[in-house]
Every structure is written in structure tokens, then in C-alpha cells.
Image (cartoon, rainbow, N blue to C red; front, side):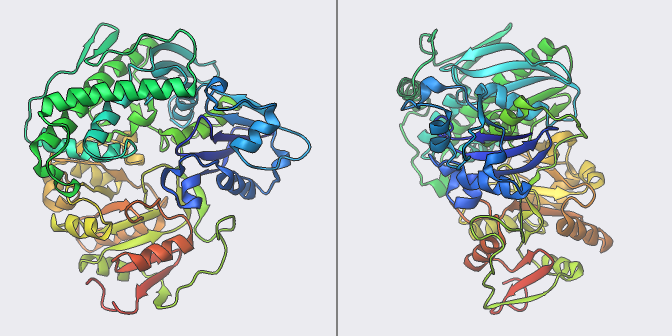
Length: 558
């Protein structure tokens, strides 16, 4: 049996994706469409390339697919009606399934999010909290999941009582896209560091919460796409009016690159962040109480807020794909949960750097103008210690928005000045932070908390005195970092460099950030990696088992 999970138009209109699982619920492949078509977030694009990649990994034709599981149950949201499942699949996925149309299973959006979190976790039972912009008719929901038992939805909150909407409003007030919530989170840290007092915009009490912007009258039926858009614009507009009243102006006074110097911009970002933190903390406690266990899973777009995740106590798991791309996995697992669970999910489910597939995978890569040698970890380590900034592209790509050392830019973070160079290389704002990666034993000395959040770089942790001293380049203005801990040989090149640093008596920690330029998806293929290396001011590229250098930079770091 083969189940193809998708996040696809018309309901899944951003972060489209595909995931293939077999009859045992084992993941064969997962891909986000943006990695292949090179369009960030792949807005309104069907996941046809992602689906083809999954089929190629399994070596099967589309006609072998038994079920297509969609991470939305929202036929009423469609801008058009479909005569049958075959017409729907042609529109949403774009594959030719042949004469036999697979069964289409539409999974409620929040259930797909919840399934992607629980089944990826190491927990036999957990409360699951899903928070995002909205699903079909809700914006927050609490679930109980247990191995061998059907999931139970405990509670939900209506669509317009949305924490995602509140954060979107702050992001757009600041001049960002609503898809740039991570920038808002990074800016909010400047408010925390300054000890700002912010207006209380959420009231949490009992088993509920109340936002300062009241939700619209609850829709007892399901809204159409046009109705949801109108509701979104109304609620986000009211939140923006509230932020304008708090700031005393309707926009920042400084450009994006200097927002950390703008007190009103920092105030708005931190105000929105406090709304998220206070509400999520309250709902997390409710989820644990409902499930009767301390183990908690988070999913939905708000679960990418690592600052909030890092404040939550107790055993906590966030999957590597908590955003909408992850509902492809959750929908597939709702149809066929994994029969064998062997601990937390490996994120390395994407394309192999030298594999075959669509979008030029397996095609020759033009390396003219570059010098190539066999990979020598000692040489790479010496380059890094001399101040070089390099990139790594090895093995299967990690899934989700965090680069986890298979498609990463790395540097030694022994000075705060490394931030300036790496932000410049990536054409990012200078106020934005970076993450650190190390081994478990040393991580316990660098930051205060690890656990499952550090598997995928999805939780902030306060740096210790040692962390601030030896790795200032990965410590943000509020004293936190977003750590990743590498176990064993899950990222061979970076792990070997960490071990080589320790052998030399240097702190075994590296700055780790995604291998992509501004506005680009993370690199996927060897061709992507070489193109990015050429266009960015990087000193070296580890590509598979080869080390590439630029002919005009033979000596290492510029």
C-alpha cells in the first residue's frame, strides 16, 4: 500500500509539499515544492515536483498510489467545484494517476498537524497543542494522542481568535511579509533585553484565554475561502490598529535593516511576542491536563516560535516540519500511522545531494572556475579557525525550515563580529541572530536546556557564562541561542569538524545557518549548492566528499 500525503492548492496555498509513506507508515520521502521549483514558500503552486520526487525515491509510478491524503478537509473552501476526485487531483497535485484514480482522504488541517507531531515524537502518549493562523474553522486546538488509540480532540478555539493573526499583524506593521514571522521574533528579543514593559493584550484564566482584539461572531457553519479572507483582513486590521495605538505611529521610522534601533518597532515586536508566550504557556498546561501526562507536542506555524518553545517546562517535542508543509506527513500518517516508532524522527528525508530526480537532480554540475580536492576535515577545520565562512551540502536534505548541517553555512563563532560577516554574506539585516551546533556533552555546558528541541533547532535556550564567552557569535541580544545538538554521524562533515575542533583544544561549537541567499529557499541539489556558492561571498564548499574553493581565493578567508 502506498499513501501520498500532500499540502496542495486550493486550500494549502503556501508551503506546498508531498510525503510518501508505505503500508507500514514508514516515510520513504518528503519534499517541499519550494526546494525544487526554487520559489520561496511556493505560493499557489501545486506540489507536482515534490510528488514526483517522492515517487522516484520509491521507484513506483503514480498509478501505484492507493490513497492521496490531503492535509485539509475543506471542500467548501475551494474557489471552484470539482466533478470528481480525478479532476481534483489533476488540479491539486498535477500527476497522471492513470486509469485507476486513488482514493482521496481529506484530513482536518489541525488533525494533520497534530498527527505529524505525535507520530514523529518519542512519546507513547502526549497532549498535542496545535496553533496556527487557522484551519477549516479553528485557530488553536488541543488533542490527546496515544499509541494504538484513536486521537481525541479535547478543545478548539474559533478561527478569528487567532494567535497567528495577532502575530501576522505585528509582522506586517513592521513592514515584513506575514510569512516572515521569524524576523518579528528576532526583533522582539531587543525588547526583552531592554526589559520593556508592554501592554497586556491577552487575559489567560481558567480553561480559556481572551485576546484584546475580540474574535468575530463565531461562524457555526464553515466559511468559504472568500469569507475567511475577509475575516482575516478584518481581524489583522484591528490588531494593526491596536499596535498603532501602542506605538503612536502606524509604521516604523527606520528602514528594515535598522529596526533594532527603532524603539517603537521593538515595542510592537515584543508586545506581539508576549501575547504568544503568555497564551501558549497557558494552553500548554491545559493540553497536559487534558491528556493526563506531562509529555507535550506542539505543531502549527506558531510552533516555529522557538523563543516561546524555549520557555515551556517539561518534556516537549516539536517536529522538524510544524508549519503547513508538515500536514502532508500528518495527513499520510492519519491514514496509516507508523507501526514501528524508534524515537524522534530523523529530519533527513529530502533529496540526496548527488541523487537523481526532477529539477536537474543527477545532471552534470558546472564547476568551472572552482578548484576541487578530496574532502580533508583537518584542512576544513584549519580554514574555519583562520576565520573562513563555508558551506556544507551532504547527504539527504533536511526537511523543514531549519538547516540542520546537511545544507548549512558554518563558521567559528568565537567573536561577535562573525555575525556581521555572515549576515552580510546572506544579505540579511544585521540585527538578526544565528544558531549554534555542537555535540551533546559540550552543549550541556554552553546552554541551559537541550532535550528534543535541540534536535531540529526549534527552541531557544539561555546561554551559560561559558557559552557567552566561547561562542558570542551565536548568542542573541537577550542572552539566548537556538541550539542544535548533533548525535553520532547524522551530519558527517559537521560532526567531524566539531570533533576536530575539540581535538585541537578549541571549543567544539559552530555557527550554523541555512545555506541560501536572501529570498531563496535552502539549497537542495548539487547544482543549487554550486550556484549559491558562486553568488555568495563564501570561502569554501563541502559538496559530498569534495572540497571546492574559488580560484580567486586560494588562501582561505578573505
